[in-house]
Image (cartoon, rainbow, N blue to C red; front, side, top):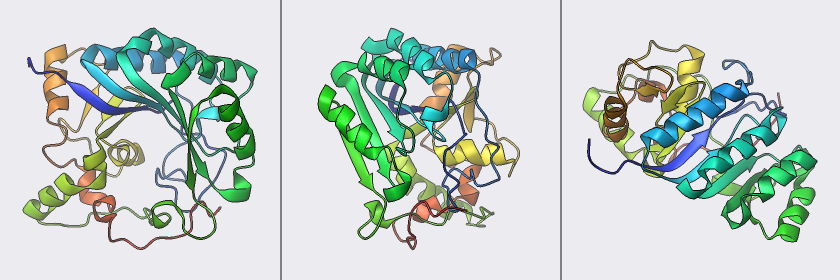
Length: 266
């Protein structure tokens, strides 16, 4: 494959541990997906593998779970600086329940004006929000606050993503819906424990064991049975057909699904 391979948004998931226990967790962390930390050396290796496969990464993201519960997050941030010239922006997504420690703050500041912090503001639950705001103002860091409390919640609130099951859509309907899925439109790839997926639901539904893996649904970053070019060809087709997870996923209907208050706790 000679064409340039670009990752618009590459989300690295170092942990599925979270500081909250939300009833409607979109990543199924209320029970079906095991909460665990991925060893630092494995996450770093996955990052290396991605930057070998992609010619361009626009946004590099660190997401969880909650990234600030990951014990080696400062070391991970330090490691990723080796690719500073290979991406346009580093995005940290947090629920603002935990403020970064001194080592993590220092690691974040290395990214200068490439750094953005995205906060899901859950009101009283996001008890470190004011500290994040002050930190970003002091260091001129781009901050995005998504209001998920009270009235007028971001995107209308959350959807009920629980109880995934086979929606039994006819093949042509499934393919059309998968192609028009909001996750397809934003092209936010997820990396978790050695696997590169085209979206978070593909990633976490596989972790749930809902279905056997399907060929070409994801790329095994640590598997050397496929060549670099073969892996790049799979990625180039990521958004051209449905995943196995698409059969079970309600997010295809995100635009018309009812909304619920965010972050209600178990």
